[in-house]
Image 1 (cartoon, helix red, strand yellow):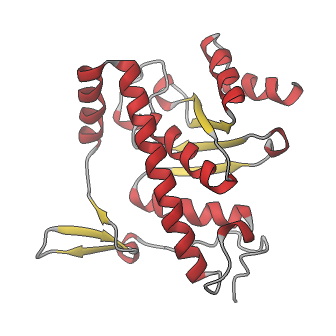
Image 2: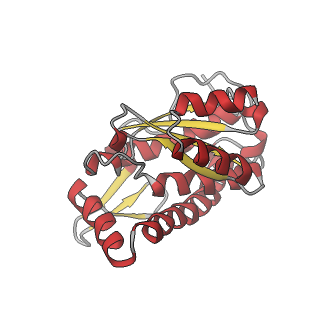
Length: 222
């Protein structure tokens, strides 16, 4: 049955079903490529942990967090440019861009390859869109699961990724904050995407000890 990207009739549909369909291994080159030709690398949780701790040791926690956020932001912006090209060819007949397709279809199609790549499963919550906010939950964050329980958010590269992705999609500057993290003892990591004022407010409430649920409630009644 054909998929119409302009409607919502795609529940359960994904572009890729199995890692072998998504990755191409060139044994002679010792290289791994993704379906769209991007070079990939397979790393362990120890590598991710060592990368974060090593950068933090070199530049300090605050600069390290900002650096990871900025890396994620640049990654998100570039990834969405490539993704828009792919979606135009696969679903848009070479003419339709992602802004002309169903929003949930677009983002589920975008995230599914990242699940295959090991970045975890996600839940996209659009219930706060009228408030100018988007909420994302990540289960099995590659970063958080490589860290110990440290009592603070650690998925700064994810936050930057969502900031870059939603800035591109919404065509205006968006920022992101992690308001709940596996490394804080939670089951899932939760991110809030909005404008600078909203993210600053969420950061203030989080620093004051508010839970993710309380922060969202503050926006809901604000």
